[in-house]
Each structure stands twice: as C-alpha cells, then as structure tokens.
Image (cartoon, rainbow, N blue to C red; front, side, top):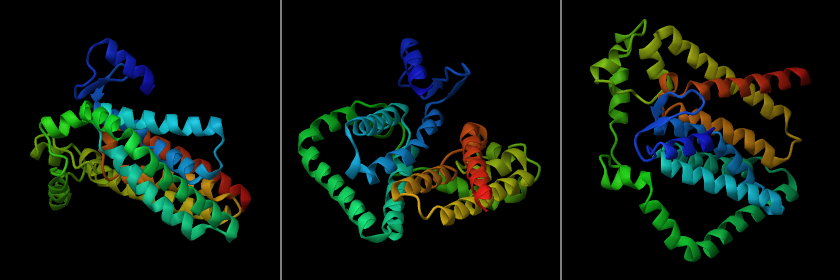
Length: 277
C-alpha cells in the first residue's frame, strides 16, 4: 500500500507536501499520519539486527531492503515517529536481549550481533557518509525542519498534553471541545485525544485495552522461555514500538488501523497463550 500510494502521489505531482492520498481509500490524509504505517517495521528491523550473526544472503538482502526503504519512506513522509520508535525499540530490545539471554550460546550470539553492528557502522560510515548526508539534505524531512516552518527540537506537543490534562473534564462525553480551544491542536496522545473526541468512557476503554494487552504479552513472555531470543525480541520490540506511538500520534482520529493491528496481535497472543494453559 505504501509503495503504490507513493507512485500514485508521484504521478499526481503532490509528493513533498503535507497532504497525502491513500490509494486504498482515495482519501486525503496527512503525510506524517501515513508514516505511521512504518511503525510495526521497527520490530522487524530489531529482529534482524539481533539476529544478524546468522543472516544468510537472502535474509540479509531482505533486512537491508526493509531498513533502507523504511528510512527513505520516513524521510519522504516527514515523520519523526518512526525514527523515535526505532531508537527506543532498539535500545530496550538490546537491554531485553542481554537480560533474557540463556546460557553461553545465546549470550555469545548476542555479543556477536553487537560486534557486527559496531563493525558495520565503523566500516560504512566513511564510505557512505557523504551520500547519506546528501539524501537527508534533499529530503522532505530536512525541508520541514531546517528550511521550513518547524524546529525539530521545539514542539508544542508537550504544552498541548499539559493543556489537555488541565482541561481533563471539559469533554466528559467527547465532542472535541479541548481541541477546539487549541484551534484544532491535538495532544498527539491516543488516550487524551480519545478522551476529547469520544469521552471518558473511551478513555477508560483505551486504558483497559492497553493494560489487558500488557497482561497478555507478559503471559506470552512467561510461556515462551524456550523460544529463540531474536523471536522473543521481535514480539517485545513490536509491542514497544506500537505502545510508544500511542504517546506520539493522534491514533483515534488519525491512525485507527494501528490500534486495530495492536488489538489483532493481542488477540492472537491471547489465543496462543490460552491453548497452552
């Protein structure tokens, strides 16, 4: 969908703007909102990174293709979320892997993957630095934050979250009253945006879904101690990446599909866990 939508927008001459046409619905949405399609790929990238010690040619090509294409797509869509969730997922995934590595073999494999990553950075940096900088400086992302109308280090989202918290009971039944006070400014927080759009009942439901998902994942984690470490890390990093995006994007009004995807994974893990009980 992302690739087809890209070529469609390219043919229409609108690649590079803040609006984007989704080819699946032919509806206009924000480019950064469409960039959330990339969030689940963070878990896949981390899986391959922590499994890089054993990647054969085909899987290595697949990994590099996913990594390069998702980074390029995010630069084109001007989004910050994918970079954020990828960094957080990798950091927490690395800590998770070191904590859960069982025996000398898994620890040795993990250390080997880390060495390969460090070696790749050392070798490729002088070879590709100029090309990477050139791609970055000609991207929509660079245009947005360095020549355009935003500063990447300054954002009103923190102030919006505080404003939403201070006016928590202004929209007990929804209606977008808090957003209207900010002239359309969303909190970019699924729970607070859900509260403002649909009311306290939805806010409580979203908290309940997230808590239930955490319990399901924890049960799955306890039951899969015998599964290889990179696969366990795949589920962990996917869980982390999607939950991180809940606090950085207006999911309810902008990216409902991600919540549906999150719930689908939760139900699948729940079904798997209950069959093993």
